[in-house]
Image (cartoon, rainbow, N blue to C red):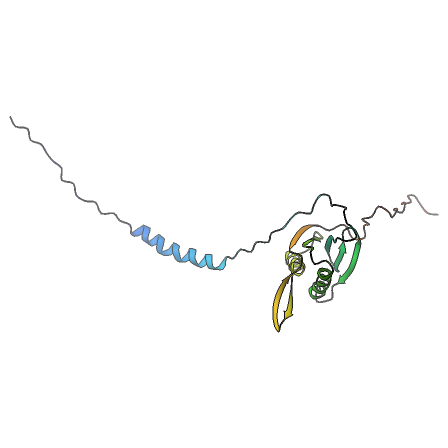
Length: 181
């Protein structure tokens, strides 16, 4: 008695990858085109310190640039307002701010920190341009335009309400309630 063994003939199956190739043909140029146009700029920012040190107050500068609707208030956190840079009808005067920052850098060459405070309705563009003016300046050296570092370590925060006094020395005027006769 002989047993017949039946063997199946296996045929090689061809893999159909045309759908996958169509996807790759469309996807690769799309990814390459979007990668070229998306550029990422990172600014390293620090939050303002909760408490400031009160050592060497007369010799140190705690630069503070407050962005207001009508200009910049440049001051020392401890010493008060240094100078006000008013804006014109064309907008903020970044060139005058840069000149003032350069003068402060000449007086305090070792200082690297600055704080930029802005009002709630300040646009992002104004904030970035102000930070750029505080961080570096373009000057002409040896006949060519070069960028020099001013105050690169920038902290950002909210501006105090305009007209509010930071110093507790000034007493507030009492508010009278009632009718005046």
